[in-house]
Image 1 (cartoon, rainbow, N blue to C red):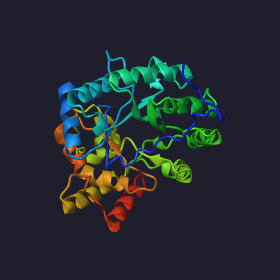
Image 2: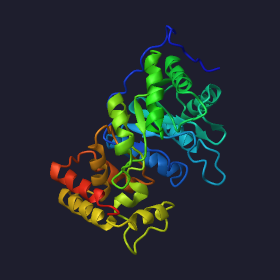
Image 3: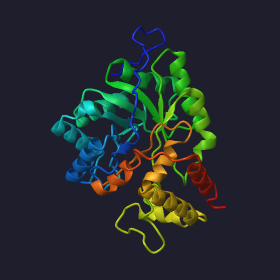
Image 4: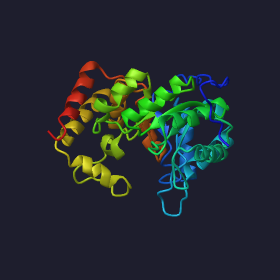
Length: 325
């Protein structure tokens, strides 16, 4: 049974800080989906070799694929860690709440899900454990205490919340602080040059609470890599329809033109520029992006050394502001 601590629990201590997560968190959603075991191993090897540190996955990846049950990504990462002895070299992040057989954040669900994730990842601890989505059926203090219990028993180092509305995130973090429990210190949400809604909703809350944002969908299903252009959509990609939707928005071509210009001047791929812009936004620690091949990864790692100037950041923001307008 999950240990659910209380305010008077003598074991209720703050979560250990994770420190530097690097310039980019590698998304593991493609592992076992569009990247098979060999391709996934190659991407993981290349990411660490390039200086990458943090790897993000979830127990639900890739349950949406016919014949998959969830946990495929974790299993591949676990096999890679075992084969390479790389556990101490990486910050390992995974999530609970969206596995088809383990939905929600009830204490018994979290206990079963965490046990399964540890087994698949072949490790005895997870560095950053997220609630993958809110569980509206539970009071914030229950969610806070359940997640805190995973830190207190030593199986998790730090906590995060993903896809939580601002009011619920504040309530969960506040409940943990009020009870003297390890509180979520990270948030993971959809954010990019073409999706900035959280700037007026969630980001002010994160800044007020000191919670670090690690945004996913940073490249907008590949649209912000620049590979989707009129007449050149990549039909081979399962995300091409989503990217085509962004391309159809008024102002999208102007944004791509600004990205193209900055990328050409810096001698880097377009994706590196989009990631560098996101990394500079208030509250953002590092963007999350995935690659199904080493060639795709190279465009991401090119962002590691890229620092955009004030004019470049302003031009990108203005082009983003002009979308649909």
